[in-house]
Length: 239
Image 1 (cartoon, rainbow, N blue to C red):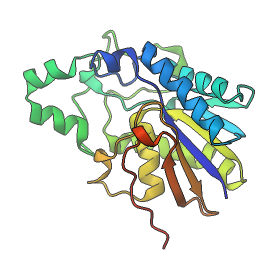
Image 2 (cartoon, one colour; image 1 turned 180 degrees about the vertical axis):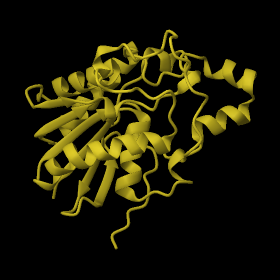
Image 3 (cartoon, rainbow, N blue to C red; image 1 turned 90 degrees about the vertical axis):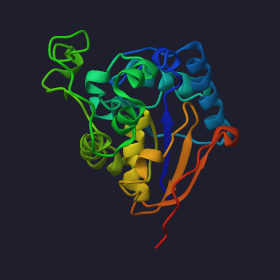
Image 4 (cartoon, helix red, strand yellow; image 1 turned 45 degrees about the vertical axis):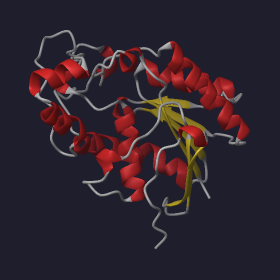
């Protein structure tokens, strides 16, 4: 059976500052670096040997992957980076402090923007400090102005189908180091989580989620390697 590990990046500096990050290329905090190293130690203890790794084009996910692979002694494996594994784009909320944003727009409205499945935040204005159109890592791509979890999933799944699923179907063991919402999209797809329930699925930072899959890439078993920091998983359907 193929094995898949999902690893959310360690705490970033903007996580620490309680700011909406999205596509902004923020680095890990010291705590985030330690979480990534700890993730590698957990992977080594679990005896997982990877054939391929995938990550986004954002530093916090890339460095989490580096540190975790270093921790499990597998820095040599092939790595593919792609923008489609980026975090959800938070549009006009990008860079704002979450508490201050709640005071300005109301906690209920901010909760809707953050936790609804298909309601995006206001779009990002072109030409501002967080306009990614001129960023050369997105050459040939039109960056979104905002995203919901639904539209995040709509860009993640074609990449999953084209690049990741074939590796797993070939029996490979795969590690994906990415972000809360891009990984949430994969979890929704694999576990068949409903639109209403998926916004409530939490994925802890730096805690590897090991998922054993059957030949049809349906989850057979799933567990977080650090049980003390685990979050509830969607129920497995073995039908």
